[in-house]
Length: 355
Image (cartoon, rainbow, N blue to C red; front, side, top):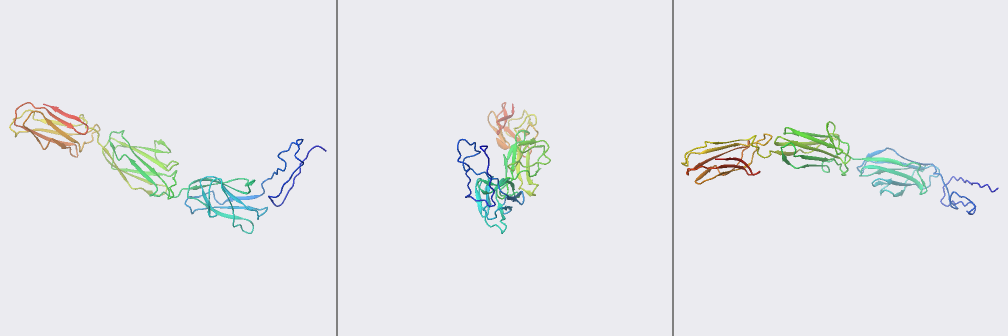
C-alpha cells in the first residue's frame, strides 16, 4: 500500500552465502543501508576465562573456553585486542591478530591455555566471522614472578660523600623477575649499620615519604633511599624484598670528613723562643677536625719555615693520623726570626702562620 515495510528472515545456520536484496534500492526509499545490506545480531557465542590472572613466566596459564552453540561446526576465531604478545594454541599472538581455534570436543567446545612472559593486562575477544564478535571482551592480567637476584639491580652512587649533612648518597633498588618484568607494590626493607646521625630520605612512587613504615616499590619496581650524615665513617646498606623474602648483598658507603675547621681544631707552637744550636726544637702539634667535629684523618699537611739552616722533622710533609693528629719539630743553627706556616694541602688551607 505504499506504506513501506520490513522483511525479517531467521536461519538456524549462519551461512556466508546468505544475501538479501529488498526492492531495487531506488531513490524513493529511505533505506537503513545500501541495497543488499545484511543486519545480524550476534548469535549465542560462549566465551570466557577460567581465571582473571596468572604469572607471566611462560608456564602459568589462563584457560580460555569458547563455543558456538547454534552451530558447533562453525569455526571460531580468537584474537588479542590490546596488550603485549601472548602464546595460544602453539603460536604467538600479537595485538590486532586473530587465530582460528582447533581441537574442539564433540559439543563444539574449545578449551586452550594462554601464556606469556610479559606482565600487564590483556583484552581478548572471540568471533565467528569478522562481523560477529563476542558480546563482551574478556580482560585478564599477567603478574610478575618472584624477585630474581640476577635480573634485579641495586645501584649506589656515589660510594663516598662528605659528612656535611647535605652531600647525598643515593641507593636505588629495582626489583625484576626472571623475565625482567618490573615488580611493583612489593614491600622493601633496608638495614643501615655502622653509621651515626644518618638522615635517610625514602622515595617510593617518585614521592618522598616522611614515615617509611611500609615502603613499596613503584610501578617500575623501583625504590630509592638517599642518605646524608654529619658523622664520618663507613655505613653498610642491606636491602631486602620483604614480600618475597629475598635479601640483596650489602653495600658499603663512606662519609668522609670535610675541610679542616680551625674553630674545631687544635694547633700549638711551643716554645716561641729557643737557642739556634741545631739541637733545641720548636714543636708544632695539630689535632685536626672538620666543622662537625669529625677527625680529619689522612690529610696531607705541609710545614714551611722561612730563613735558612732549618731542619724539619720528621719531614716537611706528613699525613695526619687516624684521629687527625700530626706533629712536627723544627731546629735551626741560624739565629733569626722565622715564620712558620702549616697548610692543609688537600684544601689549600693555611692552618698556622706564626713567627
